[in-house]
Amino acid sequence: MTAGIPLEHGLLVAAGLFVIGFIGVLVRRNLLFQLLSIEIMLNAAGMAFVIAGARWGEADGQVLFIFILVMAAAEVAVGLALLLRLSNRFGDLDGDSVSSMRG
Amino acid sequence: MTVIFYLSSVIALLAAAIAISRRNAFHALLYVVVSLLAVAVTFFSIGAAFAGALEIIVYAGAIIVLFIFVVMMLNLGPQAAGRADGLLTPSMWFGPALLALTLLVELSVILIRAAGTGTSDTAVGPREVALSLFGPYAIGVELASFLLLAGLVGAARLGSGARSTGGDR
Image (cartoon, rainbow over all chains, first blue to last red; front, side):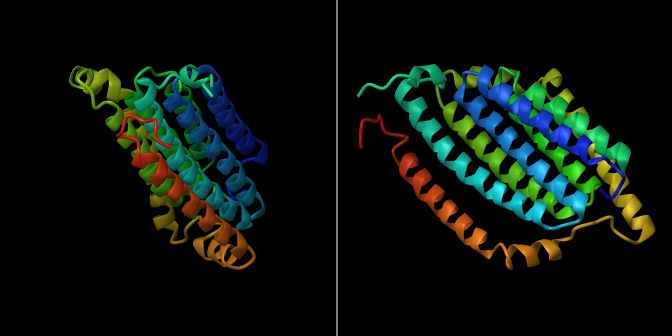
């Protein structure tokens, strides 16, 4: 890396962010917070790509970061639309209220 | 640059950890924005300035604003007026403001250092990224456009019925 930062430290930070997002998905029952945690996880994955790309001085890391960005944008658009539907139908954002199907 | 990298990494982890433990969605969103800005500063410090700019513009600027819109739409109830009272007390905005101020100082150090030496610290610039994106990865760009179109259609379809009482197919 350019400033002499070891690759392991950068990847550790990305892994820490991912774990924090993962804990958020598991612990929180509010669907809005779960979507936010998924954003943190996707951001951590993109950070790992950028750091690894900077380690070897290649542009591929940033290219894949752009793809992750696109995927996060599409995911959050559909997820938030679903969130609005759920809050209209069930009145709250609790994930457990939609855990059973009434088919 | 090493100090800046580690300091903003700590800020990113700290803000993310605080964000997922808030009760109020607005405060969580503030801390998530700070976390994303801190990740962008780490990108600047390792020489990936283009990715850092995209992180700020798309993540903090577009995706989180989308979250804020949805949170504001969800608050459209009779209880929303009382809920908005406690949002701007100093104890609520002081933490994110302090972290964001630290990030601003770090970014200023990066910019001043780049201006002083006359050479930017960009290891991989936008030119290399663009040549790679529209060269070997062109098929990925096409697939990303498919994905965005599918996301647009899905969000429009799901969002069009969001105001009704539901039950439609």
